[in-house]
Length: 221
Image 1 (cartoon, rainbow, N blue to C red):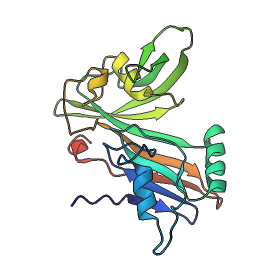
Image 2: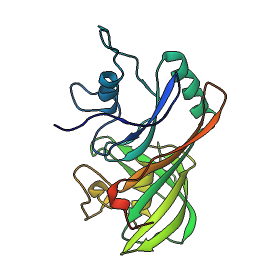
Image 3: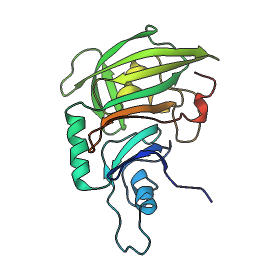
Image 4: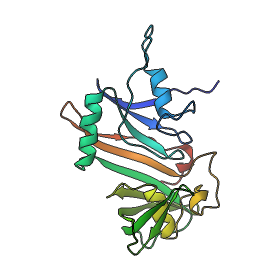
C-alpha cells in the first residue's frame, strides 16, 4: 500500500512545512488525493470526531514538488497570509531544462494572461489588456548531461509564472508538456521544485527551510 504520509521538514506549535510530492494538488478537491486531505488524516487525534484545521497558506501546482507551508489554526493562517502580502516570505525554486535561457544569470519580465479553458498562462513581452506583470530572476547552477539546472527567485507570484516564463524564453521545464516540453520525467510531475522557503513565524523567528529535491535532480547539481 502506498504511504501517503506527508514528509514534515519543520514544524512549530501552530504551523508545519512539508515537502509536497509531485502529482497531487494542494487544496482539497472532492475526494481526490491532495495535501489538505492527507494532512487532515495525518493530524487527526485518536478518538476525535471532527477534522483538524488545515490552513492553506500558499499553493504549489499539482506537478510541482517542494516546500509548502501550512497553518494549524485560523489565527496563524491570518498571520502568515499577511506576511505573504507584505512580501516577508521568500520562495526559491530549482528547475531543469534541456535548453538554455538567454544568459547564465538574469531577469525575465513578461505580462501573463490566464487562459482558463486551456488551464495555462500566456506570456507576452508587451502589455496586454488584463495581463499581470511577472518578474523573476534566475541563475545557472550547473550544466550536466544535457540538462541546465537553474535556481529561480520569484519577485511576483502569478499563476504558472515560472512555467510560462521559462517556456516563453525558449526553455520549457522538463516534463511540462503544457508548455512545450517533449520529455517525460515521471507521471504527473515536472522538474520544478520549491527548494527553499524563508518566512517569519508567529513565534518571532525568521526561518529558512529547504526541501531535498526529487530523484530526477540527481546528478544535475
